[in-house]
Amino acid sequence: MAKAGILGAGSWGTALALLLHKNGHQVQVWSIDAGEVEMLEKEREHKSKLPGVRIPEDMEFTTDMESTVKEKDFLVLAVPSTFTRGTARNMSAYVSEGQIIVDVAKGIEEDTLMTLSQQIESEIPQADVAVLSGPSHAEEVGRGLPTTVVIGAKSKKTADYLQKMFMNEVFRVYTSPDRLGMELGGSLKNVIALAAGIADGMGYGDNTKAALITRGIAEIARLGVKMGGALESFTGLTGIGDLIVTCASVHSRNRKAGYLMGQGKSMQEAMDEVQMVVEGVYSAKAAVKLGKKYGVALPIIDKVNEVLFEGKNPGEAVNELMLRDSRAENMALQWKE
Image (cartoon, rainbow, N blue to C red):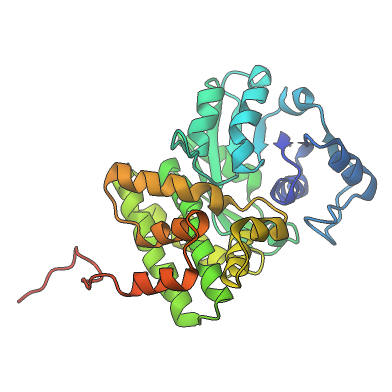
């Protein structure tokens, strides 16, 4: 049995806490919100985030960050991406040399263009930072539905250890040394999911969705490989796998926000209605900056940004995508004659 500290008591933090508890580990969950902690302790259910999923009586919730971090075998950082750096900074004084931190959020910092693991390492240089990513909605993990994910870490030893901590009969865990590729896939797919949601909201069909998913992963992979990520990460669970589930699932907050925008709501109205952090909105500008920095064309991501931040009509954005200059699907494939 290991001792695990979970930082963040939202849907994903709670679902992973339940998973680790089921695996026999001692789990303590921290939240900055005293009201949330009181509700979870009393109700033993996260009624707004994981309704119907019961929380064991021996799972502890607290607002005491120090007790959640100290003397734990590993930590899970499950706060929204916009709060990752600040939370890491606050944790730093309590993290011991070599203590493992598993980041499970997805995003890119707009100002620095850092991934979340890079942000954590800059604030907690003594930590051993890993990432967990893949097609894994908290609503399904919390209910024990079969799910597969990937653990990325700097060392095989850390990855293998975390694989054993998280894996069970309904939660299959693979390992990878490519943290960068995993994080880029997990972050950028949220932007494509906004586009997929917009298309659904406008009444477009399966053909459109398939095109967005396929051409979307092509954009993500082009940029990711140019930045140093491995192509295999974008063709696997943390790339195309995560993109498919985020573009298609009723649980996807990014798809839902896009759907509402496709029906005519503003970005802010859509985010207010979703009532959860829409990570794609925060990663969209960073993705455009990365495309320009590395000289990679990102036509879908560019149009999503224009809809989000420049007031472009979604229908006009679709027309501009469809009417771009004609080209081959894959420039790496050569004609024999």
